Image (cartoon, rainbow, N blue to C red; front, side):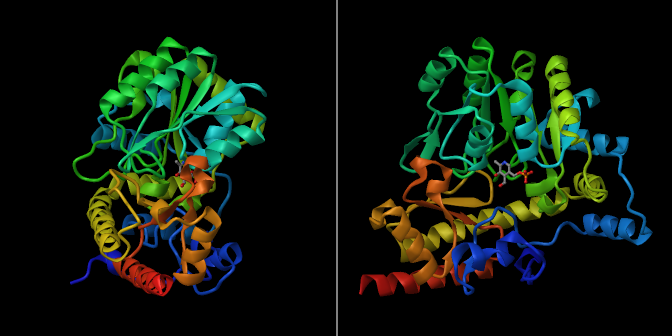
Length: 392
Ligand SMILES: Cc1ncc(COP(=O)(O)O)c(C=O)c1O
């Protein structure tokens, strides 16, 4: 019997970026979309039920976030991440990117330096650039496909004067789930040099067996005082279209600065459905998530096995978390533009261009594996055929 995640759901004509914007972005109609980081799965049933019940009410005025949502979030953080969060620390934002932008505006001035660790989620660059901050790159170190932090360089950067760093934990696109030692080292540097870490932990729940996500702020009270943590039900339960994320700020002065900026932007509310979806997901979505993680883990193994057979020049290290694979295509010897062209024109696959994640991403592609396995089988078939043609 197939599992629920095997079911193909036609997402076309649902105003979804991944399927409905592919032709416009990539210039062809016949591509299999494996780009934007949401999944082709329905949300957990209790979420759908809760949304339907709210829709049936028919009145959609201004929303509040009930205390029961705070409780559901805090229970989740305690059970899943062993992190006891005080209710005063918790607030919400219409998405993690909005939360990061709010924190940057609250804590830095134009011309200030912000550290990021490429290759990394593209908005980390644009949030700095577009707000006239200077983005300082502390590139990850890659060895045999596995990435680590360059903590020596990070200390030099911190020493030369930085107010804020954006951490991606777990890391999109390289799939690392940072270890306790790595996070401790980072936290100690942030404490020593008085740097506030905006810890983007949107992928916290999507971690494969054998790995454990550790919230940076849970390491010690000293570290917690330097951290704003962003988490969300969006990646975890495939609810990105609701635009709701959790912001956790233990230190009161930081919390006040963040809250004032939210007020300045007039950005304190979400849509009426988001809190309902989030609460149902956190309360009842655990078993769905456990099944999902097994499925994604097998998806990752499947693509890794297939690529080793059909395209041994494309290297992929199995991620420790997330639902994206970071494909090292450098051995194909194609400049970025030709690599993208090959995947679009020959393989008819829409993947993210690695160079969008920073110059250290050139020669890479990011593949989203949050879809039924049969779509990945189709993708591997298309790639094998394209490579056959390419060899001739
Ligand atoms: C690291 C990271 N942060 C934030 C986001 C997007 O967050 P949101 O949709 O809540 O703004 C993504 C989406 O892929 C992501 O990978």
